[in-house]
Amino acid sequence: MNDIVGYIKQRTGRTVTDAGVYKWVTEYTQIALNGVKDDRPNVGNTWVADETVVKIAGQKYWCVAVIDQESRFALATRISRSRTARDIQIAFERAKERAGKSPKVVLTDGYVAYPEMVGLVFGEKTSHMPSKPFEGKAGQDTNVVERWNSSLKEKHKVSRTFKSLKTANLNLQGWIFFYNYLRPHMSLEDKTPAEVSGLKSPFSNWRDVVDTKTQKIRVIIKPESVTYRKREKPISKPKTRRVTNHDRVVM
Image (cartoon, helix red, strand yellow):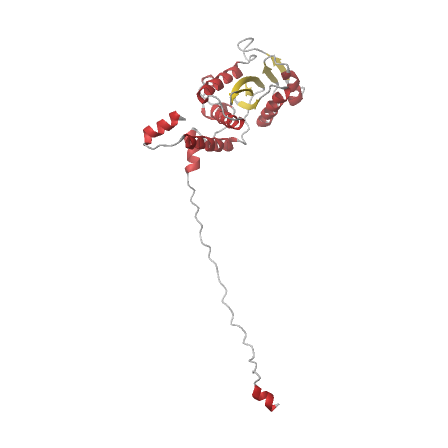
């Protein structure tokens, strides 16, 4: 936060607060996520899953991630205090929903919950293959998700510990958006995972996200031609003679 505040001060001469910067980060992250929430990536048939530790408010949490091996697209994550079969199941269900299909193969480490959850969520046609990073034949290791974990930890060093689970989730989803849509990968010939999976992002960088918020849309309302009907002359009612005291005397 201090680096951002200092940069803005140096470039514009204006002073902003940490709270102001955090508000911008929160607001623009949500705009970016809303812009791609309905995207369905055309991913491959081999997915890789793994879990890693992140710190939230000084406590150890587990982050489960599911990555498409072919496009490197991060399909789903799950942050929780535990590393149970239920947490693995939720991450798999989110990945299946995002991709709109089940994979043919899921590569993981030797954690005991993976085989059961692969069968439960993806069905019998999906095979589970226990593997290790940097071992085995090409395409049969967990290198993709291990690199993803390394990138996440490098980013986490900068942001340090999150203050709450809500903050951590929003921050993580914003980083996943950056990873999938904005960050070119050397292994993908400098394309983004979104491009490889057939998605066209509405944003090419964070400036585009900001411009989406700041653009003012001018609405022009053209007056319609209205024909008014001429008011008809009201029918005159016969006048009623008022009875006076003189009339009453005569009668």
